[in-house]
Image (tube, rainbow, N blue to C red; front, side, top):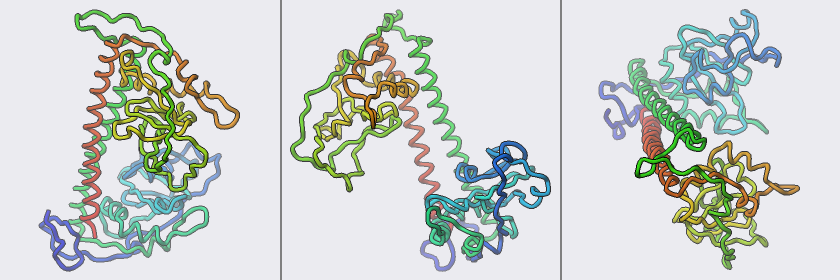
Length: 412
């Protein structure tokens, strides 16, 4: 590839060296014929012909017959009026957010026809273009801004056929379209493979965690012998309520929040409209266990990292000291972090309005404890899988950054 930034004319910043001609502009209405989809009754859904809806567009870079989730029971005459064939573009007609309205996917099944729903606009192939190239072009900032800026509505954002037909795009020769499409498809394929690697590692970790907790998978000590049987103990034996030190000066930039679904502890960025009022805030220390009283059972807990030492949280986001001689911190998080475990904790929440799990209730929960030596082995084993997941996730993020860069520079 060569950089075309210094060249004059309708050419992208990056280009394959064998292509030199300027790109030409076309209206979307010159190459696509638009039609709104089927509005069926609820009784018609669930069987019949494959039926493309909004979720298919949002969840798939491209759509094939086998990927389609839903179906609709209509006669062949309707199917003949509302077909989706290879190369057709599908648009999301309506959305609660301006950012999603007009989102696209492309139908790439050469063998099977589908149909489409009322919240979808189909662009029937009516001109010469490479389908993957066009779909990618429709995702560039230049095109997305044209679509979203013209969307309207009071409670939902909508686009119509006239808006789509008026959108201007730049097109190179068909050969160059094909080369760009092939290159970006290669990156998409690599991203798909990388996602699969990560999902398989997460599944492996989940499966092995369950086997460890259930006793199906056991570790040996340094002499090759089995560790002692696990003992049921209250969390109070390994954690305690620290001295509560109120902060005299409350700096909003030093407030902590605990994210749901085990997403960790972070600085609270939603403080602009926060009214401190009479709320007491307490100083928290690195290495403490911290959780949200109202969302412990939604995975709102974690360990305070070093960079948040001395930060603050309210009484609804309490912290507990960990007795490191009795519990391995990583093992504690792995044990509590099983979804089927922390979801059950909702039964312990008390209160008439917003239910909470207080410190004393949490510390009264019993869990199974192996010896500290076995905890270290379990934690080390699972941390090694987490390390592999992190490496593969970094590779995925790099690929996604590359894709974003090429989308911004291979198109005008």
